[in-house]
Image 1 (cartoon, rainbow, N blue to C red):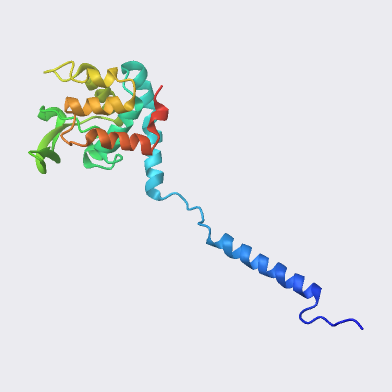
Image 2 (cartoon, rainbow, N blue to C red):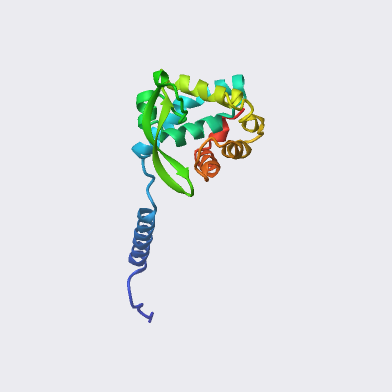
Length: 196
């Protein structure tokens, strides 16, 4: 006489095992992070870069200024084109000008004597963002009136790290971490892909 097995019949056991596998697989898949849509801020940042990059590349051909430097400075100096200086006066680079006929008096942050202070300064007004970009390239090529060779190291740099450090050495901005901020922006947003 054959022994009777205890437990579930074989087909029912296989069905239960299959159901457990499906439940476990479903739970695993539901725990995986779902890809998120880009944030409005990320979209705005991408649009800002996309809008300026072609002209930055054109300017590189004319003035030998790396587009990655132009773009990173525009991002940093204008807060992605959202600063009052950028929105209302098309000045993407914080370029100053003493002539009241061509400038606007605004408050700005400067790093002086080891601390940040708010000061008033006159900033150049431009008719368009492209005019601002061209003036920036011309400044880096021709330097200010008092030192035409001030930014030679920026144009002579063979990579964006060296160019960013040359900008800081030349005193383009008072921020002691200016070069690091530019390099971080270039790396984060892969801006060096626009350099030719």
